[in-house]
Amino acid sequence: MLNIAVLVSGGGTNLQAIIDAIDNGTITNTKIGMVFSNNRNAYALERAKKHGIDTKVLVPAEFENRAAFNEAFYDLLIKENPDLIVLAGCLVVIPEKIVKAFAGRIINIHPSLIPSFCGTGFYGLKVHEEALKRGVRVSGATVHFVDEGTDTGPIILQKAVYILPDDTAKVLQQRIMEQAEWKILPKAIDLIANGKVKIEDGKVLIEDYDPEFL
Image (cartoon, rainbow, N blue to C red):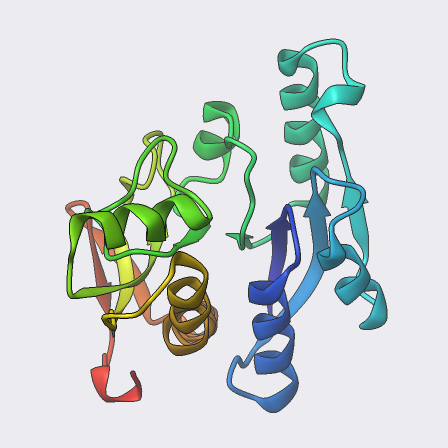
């Protein structure tokens, strides 16, 4: 049974997608051991509580400095020791110490087709605003392992979503969530939970990979 910790900062729509996928059997052999947030007012925490999932909160502003927060964050994750950490709309920069301690055990969902519209500063509506500004015809979402860079880790799954002429950033954000994020994040977790994902030479290999599910 894969024990996962889901890290969130806001509404928790991707968390809900994970919860629903576990409930309906899309994700197998998996349980959510903890939901962590850096925001006490994150609605994601309410989603977790409704399903009896343990929640933890650490707010950076409540610590003497960022280093103190990072150390408490590290200590919490080491104590919980999840098999997999899932960044599902988590706006906290993951300290290098945590990345190294959980190497190959942290994944992130990003709302674009990496390497496009990613990296420092690209999160939330900013990603979709820049895609529309550039005039690309296709965007989407990416699930990837987390390394020391920003959105630079090995890619697990991607799904493309067409951009329509009258799209706004908010409309595009919602479509990418519905058509891509809420599909590939649960799928990636299920693949990992069933031992079908490994990293070789910096690339992800998936056993019996079938893109038709997308």
